[in-house]
Image (cartoon, rainbow, N blue to C red; front, side, top):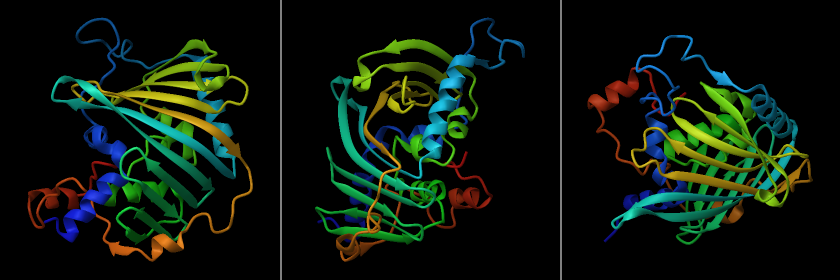
Length: 292
């Protein structure tokens, strides 16, 4: 029989389904670089210098400025990710999330499927992770910004969303962190049902591609492969139904139904070192693996 704690862990896994293939990559941020410049086995400093195409950087900055300037924002995110199979080739999984935010301190993510349904509410003071099918909710005090709340949700419960770079206060800062490569690929008239500019970027941990609306500068699709993933599994998120600076109901960022559910503690679904062990001492020394 599954105990309450095990059930709580299972629910939190459902709340962060996309994390299944990204958790290890996120935790090993200082692993060997994925992107290596061409040239000698031991390139000199000039060869290792970042290669940043001005047009690509301009597009990233324009997209980031458009997102950062929006006081309210809503969109639909369809996340697609690969997971290993016993047969060898990876299987493909998807989740759909309806996202609403109000800067600087309110966020709601409703994920009806695929996988376990989940709801996440943050109102500037409290965050709630709710599993409607099981009627279980984890409630915790939260820091006073969307960025800090997302970080706390990840560190305390492994809740991670692949569209995080879109909703943070300064998207360009997140995207440009450690950037060693950025170049412009061209245009697409297929993705997002509009004309998009395609940009590729890379740092030591991830190689990504972004499709950015040529007119509205909104991101329409993002693809990524993480360096620490030996299988190079691909992850993708499609962003649609954008609404910026629209009216948002005052009660949009909380849920009476979720608050009334059976409470469980926020906890990470991945195994943690025993209290007082070597792992806990390392954590106490000051470097969280989820911190940039």
